[in-house]
Amino acid sequence: MHVLIVGGTGMLQKVSKWFAEQELHTSVIGRNIKRLKEIEDSCDIPKRVTCLAVDYHNSDELRVKIKSSIQKNGPVTLVVAWIHSTAVDALQIISEEIERFSKEWELFHIIGSSAYKSGKKIRCSSLCRYYRIILGFIVEEKRSRWLTHDEIASGVIAGIQHKQREWIVGTLEPWDARPSW
Image 1 (spheres, one colour):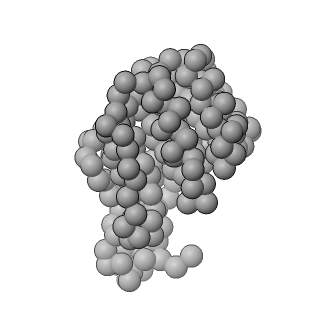
Image 2 (cartoon, helix red, strand yellow):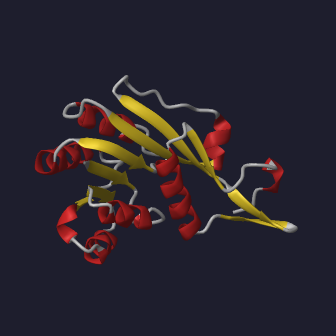
């Protein structure tokens, strides 16, 4: 099985490593070459990890990198994607490249609470099983805070394991209790 993690060098770094430890080939997209190398070096079997240094805002380069990884490591069957809203075409490009080689695949789309509140939905082809993992916040006594990197990674892994159409990490309510930036 070949897994693709988009945005897997920051808050999803532990998710990238977790997949590699599950004895799955894991391709990780990130811009930061140093962080990509850290993921590769921290895995028990570094050859299970393919680091794809690419800014997913660059559509042409993104296509080339995904196609190259698929040709080297086989069809992608699972994608974990945390993509900034500024990269409007990235998820579509990723989907198109995966579907050139894969018969069926799963997409775990990570979104923040604001994106969730907007109500915007992603359309996938019939080859894709789509799951949303929504990142909320934590309410503690009289205040609230954003999720930590560890809470995000643990919540994303739990969402992948449970395979529910919608998985919330933290809480989304009460909405007016959201922490300020």
